[in-house]
Length: 290
Image 1 (cartoon, one colour):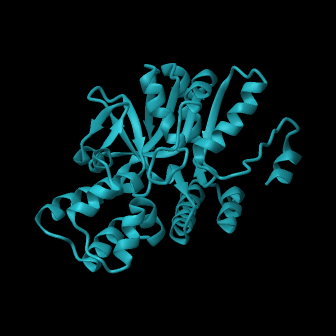
Image 2 (cartoon, helix red, strand yellow):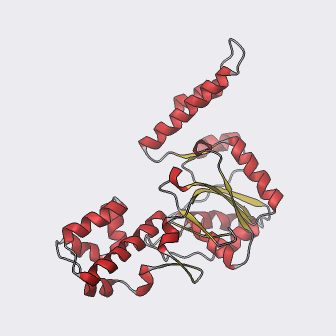
Image 3 (cartoon, helix red, strand yellow):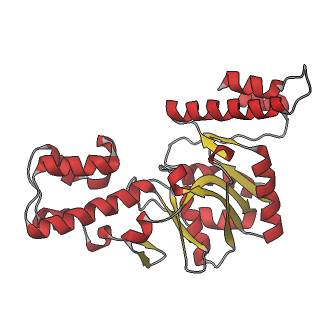
C-alpha cells in the first residue's frame, strides 16, 4: 500500500503505530504528526476497511463546510450495520457520544445477572449460554467479565455475592460525560457510526488528547472524541447514508460478497445507460478486484 500510494503522490506521510491500542491511539499518532507541522486545515479520518461511494464523500465534504461543523460523522440505520457503534444523541438530536456494541452487550449482560441473582444463583451452563448469545465469542466474554468468566467456565454457579465482588455499581450503567444513559436508550439507538469523520484540525487535536481507555476492551476508541467535543460545546453533526451501499465494510466473507453484489448491480445500471458497444471498464475492474 505504501509503495503504491507513494508512486501516485510525493506529499504523503506515514506514521507507525508500534503497539495496537485502538483506533483512537492510531489517530492520535497521526494527529500528533500534523500538529508538529502546525497544520490548521481540515482532517478526514476514515477506517481502512471501508469502500465509500465517491458521490457520498463529495456531499459529505460539502455539508461539513455548509454547516460549519467542528466534526461531521457519517451515520447509517442501525439495522443495516449491526456491528457498528451506536450514536447516542441528546433530546435536541445533537450527538452526545458513540457507544460500542461490545460495551452495550456488557451492560446488558450484567443487568441480566443482577436481576437473576437477586432471586437465586445461576447455573454456569445457563449463564455461559446467555453470555455467548450476546457476545458470540469466548475472547470477548473474557474481556467483558474478567475473572467471573473463568468461574463460569469452571462450571461454578454465579450468585449475588460473586457479582458484587467483581463489579461495582458503575459497571451496571453506561455514562457519557456524567450523564447516565438508560440501557433501553442504548439498545434502541437507531443510528450507527460508520467510521467516517471530518474534523476541523483544532477540534481533532483537542479531542484526541482527551480520550482514555476506560472501556470493556481497554482500548482508546476514536469514537470517544464525540463525547470529548460534546463537553466543550463543539458543533458535531451527522449525515446519514441514503443506502447501505454508499459505505460498506470488508471484514468478513459475507461483507465481501455484499460488496461484489452491489458493484455488479451498479455495473448493470451503468451498462443500461451506455450507448451500444461501450462498457464501463472501471466497474469491471472493481468487480474483478472484489
